[in-house]
Length: 149
Image (cartoon, rainbow, N blue to C red; front, side, top):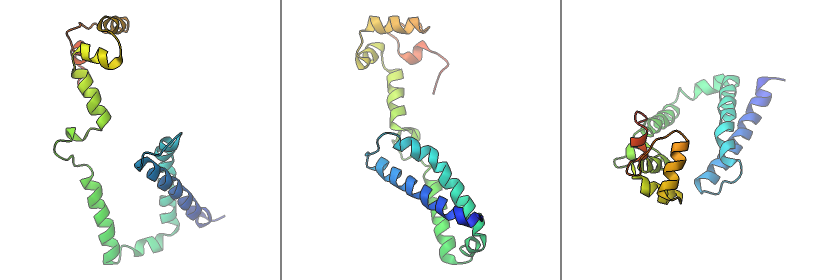
C-alpha cells in the first residue's frame, strides 16, 4: 500500500472530525468528549496534512509558484500572527476563566467563602487543614506569597 492510498482518507477523516467538533464547540453544543476529541485528535489532522503534503509534494510545491497561492498562505500567516495580539481591555489575553480565578485570588476571604457557599470560619479551617495559613481578613494571594500568576 502506498502512502497516497491512506494519506488522503486520513486527511479527510481527521478534517471531518475537527470540523464537526469545532463547529459544535463554537455554538456551545459540544457534549461528552467532543472538546477532548477536538484537542487531541487535532494531532491526527496535523499528521495527516503533513503526510498528504509529502505524498503530493510536486502539486504542493506548485501552489507556491502562483501569486494567488502565495497570497492566501501569506494572509493566513498574518492572521495567525494577529491572533497573538491581545485587544485592549481584554485582561492581557488571558482566557475568561483565568480572569475570574485571578479576581477570586485577590478577593477578601469573606467574598471567596460566599462564592464557595461556605462560612468564613469553615473555609479558614479547611484551608488551614490543607496547609494554607490564612486569616479571615486576607486574600488567598496574600496567604500564599510567591505564587504570583
